[in-house]
Length: 160
Image 1 (cartoon, rainbow, N blue to C red):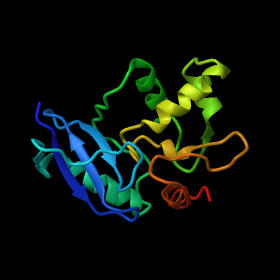
Image 2 (cartoon, rainbow, N blue to C red):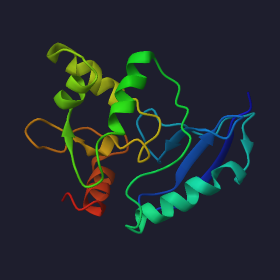
Image 3 (cartoon, rainbow, N blue to C red):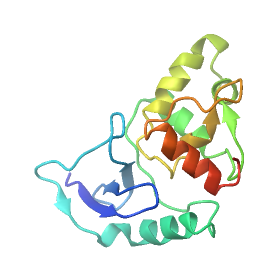
Image 4 (cartoon, one colour):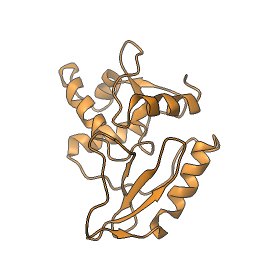
């Protein structure tokens, strides 16, 4: 499988998008992201598969788009994919907690840490809105892209 990639400029920094051979997005990373992707040897720079993502991200950052309609193909365990799918149910302009996501995926209260780990490993920042997950106290906790970016995204969405 050839990984295709492109960079897009955004208000939260340069975005690195990757896609598989079918054109489905496999990751969206930001600079200095914890466990974020970086361009690897053998990857093919090809902006073609990313046109729709580029348009939708531009509309999102302009405050004109509240829900993405893109083919996503993140790689992860079944548990992680369930958690990432649950992120899609958190609407624009709203937040949820790690405990609420755990309940949505049928995980016990003890498994909240595992849910947090899965959210932290989300390979599709912004597109899968892990920035909308906050601590039970309402605090802005953890975000692989950094708390300033989480704050910026939640401000854009009118939460802050």
